Length: 362
Ligand SMILES: [Zn+2]
Image 1 (cartoon, rainbow, N blue to C red):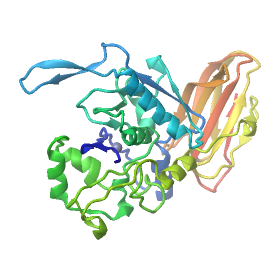
Image 2 (image 1 turned 30 degrees about the vertical axis):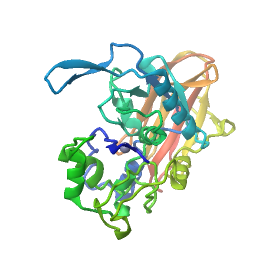
Image 3 (image 1 turned 60 degrees about the vertical axis):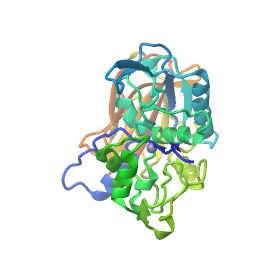
Image 4 (image 1 turned 90 degrees about the vertical axis):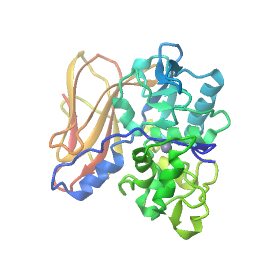
């Protein structure tokens, strides 16, 4: 069963959605909302497991005593999660997953604190979380619960909850849902239940216009929680594992990128950007001298730009900038070293048809 083990449900950390300028073109806004949490294809997502006893939450038990709830897991738990990353990778997506022992370079920090729920930040939200904090937790035994692992990694890739898809047209028996979640083993507040179940998410975040009740990102629901569609009044139980649409979705957002298509970029030579919304261009830059360089886009477009250095054949993240929804251009200003190889990934959220757009290094 999906994302649930003995009726345990995943609960997402609450993150405020961004505010847009009044009067912004709705197509631009939709493009930003759909892509702002997704990683740039080609990113090596580094995950970290807490290994020592210095990372814990302080919990108060029923008798009022405080104790340390350690975040570290067992070797078997770590292996189960690594296998979850392998499963997503095996679909042929344009992201890499790599365990790191350096917490400072990690994107995803995974705890196994029991009793603290299963949750993850969604996509790039985890990048803004302080490095000593978790971005994902498995709060119950997940050794034989691969679907919970795939579900939480799905969030880390930027997937929201499918049962909150407004296109599903689910009408809840809201009090039944609040009551169910208020009881054992979840003990959720009404706010938490609203945030994770009742609330409809923005239609621009969900994939396409259809609803996928078999998605790995869909919870199961027992008898009496769904009023409509009527065939689910007795319960909705998604099939195990990743659905066809989960696979299509993740490959669409993270296409494999072919290094042979990378363009060389030279200082003071602008490269025209002719991408469709959602597409990505990739450049190689090898400085002929060591100095401070500026990399910047020109023209009216929303982009996210990532600069990496190729070290032992792998892209090491150096810097990034995201100008989406702002009246400025993506811009990186950094000292780069002679004869080192740098990769610039530029992903387009949105561009109007008016005017030329390009990227330049100088
Ligand atoms: Zn979830």
